[in-house]
Image 1 (cartoon, rainbow, N blue to C red):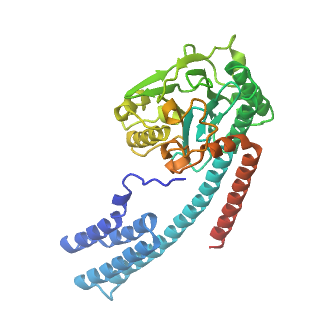
Image 2: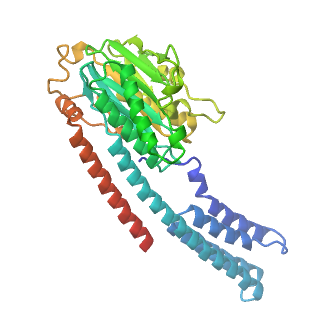
Image 3: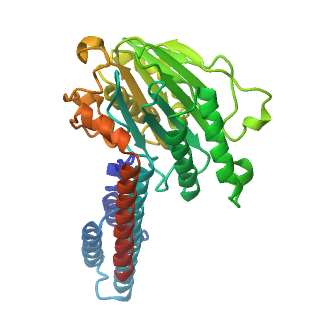
Amino acid sequence: MQSRARPGAELVRWVPAAILALGVGVDHFTPDGYNGGPLLAVACVTAGATLRLRATLLVWAVAVLAAVGLSAHHGTFGHARGASEMGNVLLAGLGALYVNQVIARQDRRLTAVASVAEAAQRAVLPVPPATLGPLWIAARYEAAQSEARIGGDAYAVQRTPYGPRFLIGDVRGKGMGAVGAVSVLLGAFREAAENAPDLPALAARLEHALLREGERRQDLDREEGFTTALLGEITPDGGTLRLLNRGHPPAYLLEGTGVRTLSPAEADLPLSFGGLAARRTVPDVFELRPKAVLLLVTDGVTEARDRAGEFYDPAARLGYWGPYPSPRSVIDTLTRDVAFWTGGRSTDDMAVLAITRVVAADDGAPGSAGRRSAQVPEGAVGGGGGRGQHREVGDAEQDAQQGPAAARGATDECEDAERDGERAERDVEEQ
């Protein structure tokens, strides 16, 4: 889980020093009736809440020296007034140390919880294959800065007899309830994508699995739980794209410097609400040209706001940096631009899936991308946090077919991370 610098954090570090200087100035340059001693105590407490332990000790030491110097300057050192001022600074310093340790303990605990949450997220949401037939694929999940809980965003890509099929969705809620719904959604997708004859049939099976999962819940999600989803299918030759939107933000098609919003011809309800509609919509069909990039996002992108409250619009902004050589370059640009748009104040998780159709000249003979063993360019590799790597095309395809073994490995990784988190918690309590 990537750490992000908070806006104004560098300025906050200088607040205790500024208060110290103000206290000394007030005491030294004002008439005798004014006393800057309380500001020295305030500087100590502020340091304890905003700085590390060593810096807090340094501020406390400077405040004590300043109190001694001011008492000597006013001739109160060794008298009741001087002793009172010194006592205030000493007590404030002790309080600052206590506050500093409480905050540090909570930070360590939050770090341990966040590491477990990240491992669980990776286990539930594995990285999709880097290549699938004539397609390059990249994906990324980014948790909101203010959240250490696991979100409900999900994506998946799978090879099927009908061509590559994919899903991006957003389950209502956060925490373990959302994780359960995400695992059910992805499990149902991997099972049904293989044999569902079309996208409406696939959506119906996903909805049935989610409704069955909701029946065993006792919380509010049993009545109000839903999942927005965008299902897609690309023909084996890579030339035709079909999309079925169930209440999810639309997909975007990037070609050169142009960005096209692939809005559905007819709106439909999210999964779990399908019984409220009299009929189901049919998939929208689009042409997928070579080098075009299909971009799918969750509402963490489309509902990101700037300081003025304006929503982020990928169609209006991503064209400036085109054309894009790979799907990962689109994701890198998008995540940087969203962070710039919000000023680093993201409040919702963000999942992104990008798919590029490879030009026939780039992958040899048509249809050979999944069979030959060749190194995939770094930008085509999907991954969280933007870490680049090289993988074999044959290996990527093998990863996509391993299914249960990959899931067991991811579960083991999650359990190991949970044990690490428990040990970190025990260490915190011992301290």
